[in-house]
Amino acid sequence: LQNDHKALMKQVEEALHQLHAREKEKHAKDEAEALAEAMSQNQSLPQAFAKVNAVTPGSPASISGLQVDDEIVEFGSVNVNNFQNLQNIATVVQHSEGRPLSVTVIRSGKKVHVGLTPKRWAGKGLLG
Image (tube, rainbow, N blue to C red):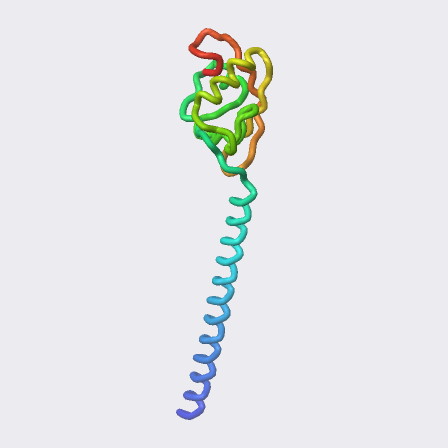
């Protein structure tokens, strides 16, 4: 009876080791897939050159749907390749007063296009 019990316990132990080894492999595979997916998403998103830190309510920027923490990828003709400083954006805004500008931002990990028309309003500047 003792021998039967030992043999049975040995089978149970081996089965448990196999089960845990398979679970560990599955977990490692799932982690690798998740990492690969995250890397591919990061590669598909273009690089931002500026981040929105404030949007005044009622301003042209607010009306167009621009939000705080949006990362700007393209602002009219300005992009990461030709951006040097914020004066680049100011120049584009001044030359585009009253005309719609195409603005591309990254919001919550997704690329979003916003139509923004710089214009005079009750507040300061043409964007707010």
